[in-house]
Length: 162
Image (cartoon, rainbow, N blue to C red; front, side, top):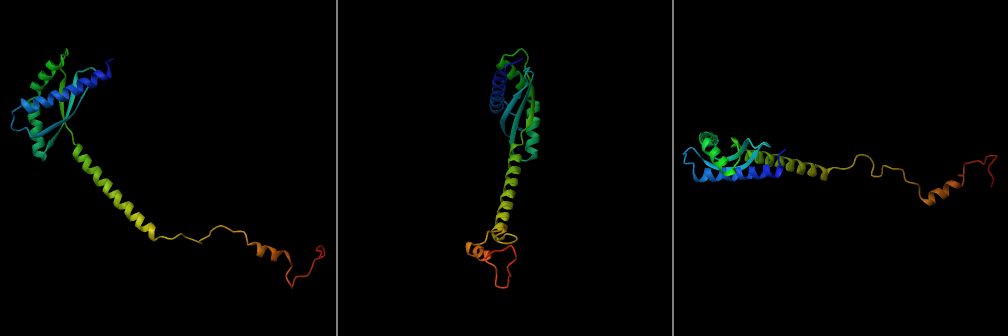
């Protein structure tokens, strides 16, 4: 069982090393405007996944992926020497599409805001269905006092006393 803090430290170190080597040592013209965003390593420290973003279109992303694939051996040996592990971790490069996801989420939030505004606009003009007072209200005291006395046309019954 490996320590999770140790795994996180190695992943962070791999991210820093790969970013440094890409910036200073790789002279491939296919390499575009690249940013190393994250690195993750397995618990056995054998396989590392490096996430990156590329500024540009799909062609720039494809050429950067090819450049990283061709420089994978040099990057792996540099990472292995710097980490001092018994086995150098294999590197896998994955295009991080965070910007596309952020744009998609922003579009969804904008659509939700417009839908909420439409609902509020409709609610401002709406009125309640039914009566203004849907519940029975007890009659006033004056009306209750009048009901105790019989009306003029009422005849007293045998049980009534006056």
